[in-house]
Length: 223
Image (cartoon, rainbow, N blue to C red):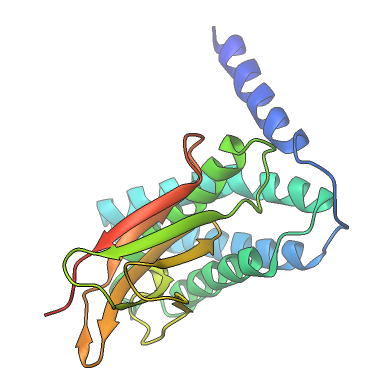
């Protein structure tokens, strides 16, 4: 039975890694990002168990396992078609956050949230690769945002693990209720603004789960 499960798991990984369609040249930029990401995770693996914090340890273990699944898939896909700049940007930001958690380990208070956010981001990316018709890492998801009451609010967003940073990484081109934009799979924060009114950022998973490649969000209007 163990041999059967091992064979099945191996077959699944091979299927994912070999089914990417070839239509672009190899890009070495990804290997640098993934190497830095792996190194940060390796460093954290030496620090986190010593904290004795169960939630932090469990969250890190999930992230470490997910990275082992995602990184090989990204490497092989990137050999056959270069990941888009938008996709690479999210991977680079995840790398930077992991390096910051490693460097400032003793002073960062929201380590569990940051690692959970990156885990969910990685999970969304891997799920989207395995669920897309061509196992395409570059598949984008169309996000439509409505406001739950009035219209005419502008939609802003950033990566989930940028929660503590005072930045606006994304802005939808049109206000609600006609706001649409394409996103690479991941875990994001979105909120509404109009004049001096600023809504509370809301966390949302954006991914292709094999059933739909569009996501409709209804955000709370600021008061």
